[in-house]
Image (cartoon, rainbow, N blue to C red; front, side, top):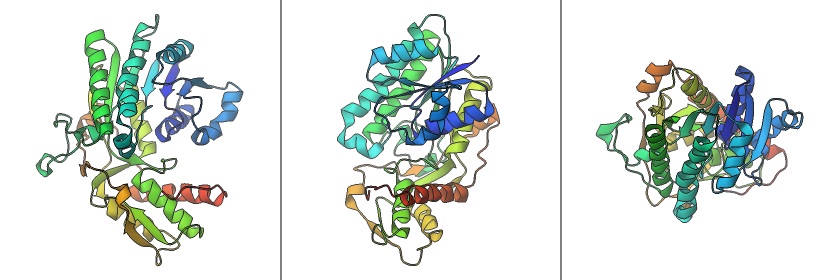
Length: 337
């Protein structure tokens, strides 16, 4: 039986990846998460976990090496998807040390735990980020893999380290590590600290009369290429199963580009309160520095695997808004952030 270890299984991407693997493989799924991690995104998997039906949750923390050794020894994985991270760029400005420790040293710790575990030689996906490219000049668009890194946040710096640590382990130790720089991807279960998700949450709260009809925003001029998280996890599966080349690195992203402001305009257009919603910039939502041009050249990955994004932008955004409508209508309280 094939075993897979997913770090960060309770996140948006990790939970959707678990769903994909349950549906499309017969693999055993070991999901690593911190003991205090909210289980909302994997609530639908808890019955399987209780019955030990292909789903197992392992307690582990990227900042604790011993817990990672235990997680690796328990799962003995054939495949590893290293998705866990401090993933919020804005928070990295106020918690840079925790971000660097979790993302850079945490990646080193998990790769060392895998390297030193006898009797396993897994294919390892290390999730970097398009944020490593940071502030890219207009003439460098679309962004190819060899574009220079110019990170624009402590988070982006940490992902630059993650990227390099992954490649180093492939080259120095012969581990089967592959690196991805996924561009903007979203959908149901997206955390409410990210722009499109906080907009959708605010709109849902407005529709339910919980807050005034004003959507608070940060920088609306940033250009993004959007893809759906469900396309993203399919890409990750193809990454490790279609002729994986240790040490390889790929940009992955969708094909539809628009500014954050245009994305917000679309979300408002499908709201039941579209004629009453106003937009207001909130200076607290602005980053000190922003990666404002994020348009990928994903041809290298597409040629290698045949992957294409399939879910259109409009469906992704509608599903995201419906996700928040369902959560808000449940009666739970949410911060207006």
